[in-house]
Image (cartoon, rainbow, N blue to C red; front, side, top):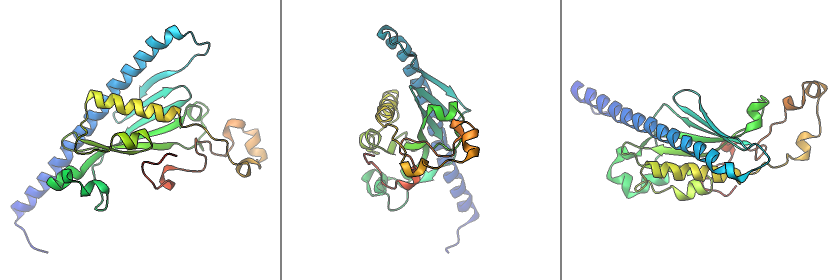
Amino acid sequence: MESISREQLFKTIIDKSSLKQDIYDNTLSTLRVFKQVIEEFTRDFHILSEPLNTKHHITFENRYRGDFEIEMKFGGDILIFLMHTNIFEFSRDHEVMRTPYIREDKNRSYCGIINIYNFLGDSFKYNRINDVGYLIGRIFINKDFHYFIEGKRELGFLFNDFGKNLITNESANKIIEAAILYTINFDLLTPPYETVKIVSINEMTSTLDSISTSTGKRLGFRFQQDRSVNTDD
């Protein structure tokens, strides 16, 4: 390994740390933009749905669990926007690393991440701790407020131009709208018969909602087992 001066070493530490701090700030700022837009969605839902005179009470609300998490609940679904506090770089074989945008400036490949998870509202309401959530998308934000999304259907197809996509109030609206549309069209499937045909006395006496069989929209499949990106599942 080629030796460098202590001054060069310290400069490298300062430059890398400053880059990551800038990206962290951008990612947190992006989450705050999402928070503002989600509040607008919530307000508009209550205004625009009132004349529809539905006989059912349809939930649309949001709340916050600290500085890094936004929960949006609508109908029977919950979307959770969760910011990771660390900064990541795309792997060498990732498709974005081959784009001119990254080749022009490798520092653009360092990103903060906001994950979007979909859960069933009843999973939290009835404390069904064995239920599973689904990662429907993850948003990468870099030092220049450019973003790239890996995700399902609308999320993966519409927001994958890293070199052109910028975080703005307008783009945040489109991202959240796409996440809602995907979620309401991502329906709960009946669990396979073989997975639910046996139940213990303990499970039955601990109330129906505590049965250990997991409930999820694609039962038995967690996102980490679904290796592909931009699929139609």
